[in-house]
Image (cartoon, rainbow, N blue to C red; front, top):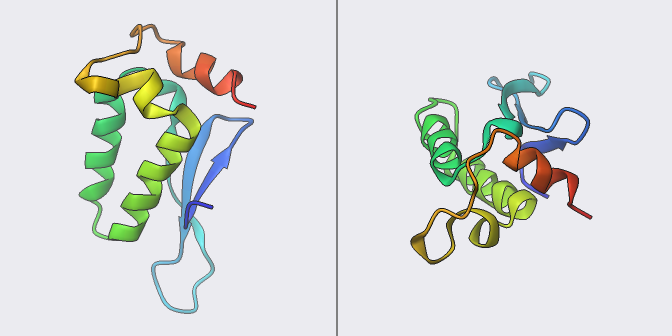
Amino acid sequence: MWGNWRFNKDANVLVIQKSLCPGEEAKDLYKIDLERCNTSAAILDFIVQMSQKLWITRDDLGFLIEAFDDLFTLQVNFCGSEFEHSDGKTDYARRILENRI
């Protein structure tokens, strides 16, 4: 669905699973705690942090953005029309994730 990214619903984290060497088994390289994504700035910060990893690919970044959008419906809940839509409370992301179908 999102390339190497997986959503762990029980922990509300996105995990990227890849191998760094040919023939090596894929392992969890990085986890994003989605409950920390309470503003559009926080989401952008994670995207930029990931872009600076030497092992990340453009495909990985694109799939990360798709995962954020699929999970949070970004234009509705965070940044539509260039305005911050979140209430900034520490449980905003958790509330969105809980209301997903």
